[in-house]
Image 1 (cartoon, one colour):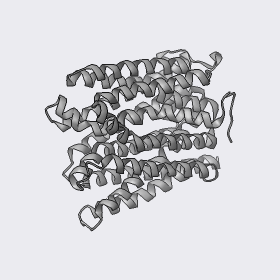
Image 2 (cartoon, rainbow, N blue to C red):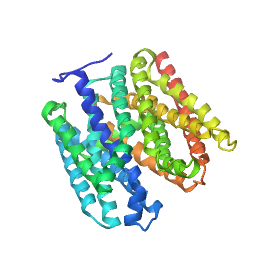
Image 3 (cartoon, helix red, strand yellow):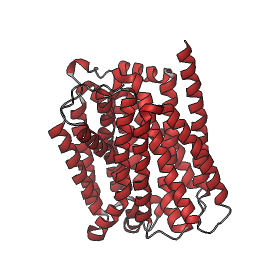
Image 4 (tube, rainbow, N blue to C red):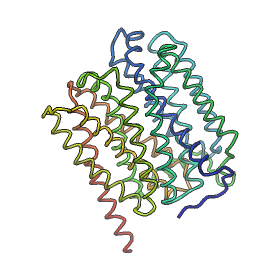
Length: 405
């Protein structure tokens, strides 16, 4: 069942707006991918590993900011927190554009991630303010489909911008993107959290909310599985460009292939939106993870077989990784958020902060095992989805036991 309280804008516009707010994260990461070699040459004496910290520190800032933006939005309202986060994001992007040395740019990226947490977390809380249950999962699926369109174009957009302005111009694009999305929110969507529903910003209440979430078995399992899926995505982002360049000799065409895969994977989110109300969130996540266990195992075998056309097999597997995430993340968010409507902002923060920070910690060592093949990524993906699949089966047993009570 779907409940909508009092949104003055149509569903299509609402979904597009939430998708753009979510896409702040994807654009901030994926547009930087083609710039890393140039940043390495300009700021780190060609050290590609140091240049990759441009992505890592952004994720760290986003993970930290995610924990605070939800409680702040529960206390102050949704829109003021988005505005504050956007202001920090824009200011940090301006610093990144201006600075000429690596450390200040890294610091700017950290604070840019901190600011980007605002639109990401608050968008999830806004969706929960207005929708619940499988209806919320359907909205989330369509939002995720829009979210996946940004990675389809972001690397190519980053490369195009670099052609005219160098890598610094990408920071200018971040400013424009944020101004447009937050301006749209300010002009078209009123506050979704009334004053009487707000919770004071007290450490005790925050602690109680976190305890409540992790004591709820379904919410706890949803967060852990989402962390594993996000770790799979982070591992892919860290290794995908070296794999294209070193293993398959396609570094120059990387933005095209990456965009094509991301674009096609958007169909998975659309499919999920069409079937989730009928089939249910947990079932779809479980099926997606089971399928990826088979595919990741097959890819691991292929990394030692060296078959003709191996690049295209890898391309199909990369597509399957993105499709797995499309089926899983939106549904897992909905599963975790559904029982937590009374603390939606805090719940969105805990889910986002835990899944981001823990996933970054889990995925970071994967890059250290890169050996010039796709094997480390295949091993990591297989491990993450296999554990996630087992946990989803456990969640199913819990739900069946609760239904019998």
